[in-house]
Image: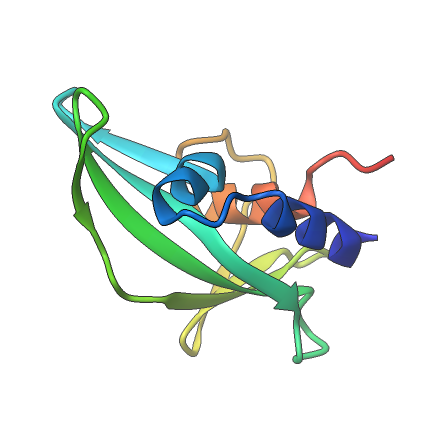
Length: 122
């Protein structure tokens, strides 16, 4: 069911990069109200590693206070996400335990996990 959800999230995104990053944003950090950095899901698949549920690609964009893109990172940052206990996000070879009781917006790794693992399904 989670695989179907990820496919729906990513397939519903428009083809243009600017529109996709607006709609696929899972975390935004603000810096003094004049700038913000947003992390977005660019791609995702069921994980090839049986210890994880999803393999995703993350993009990063910086915006000014009016929403104009100041910088768009051309990198494609890969991560793996495990939904079940112990919840975890893997970046490169580092595993980060997820505190599933955290509040949204406090940590980008939690927000990535929550975007993929706690979205309602019908």
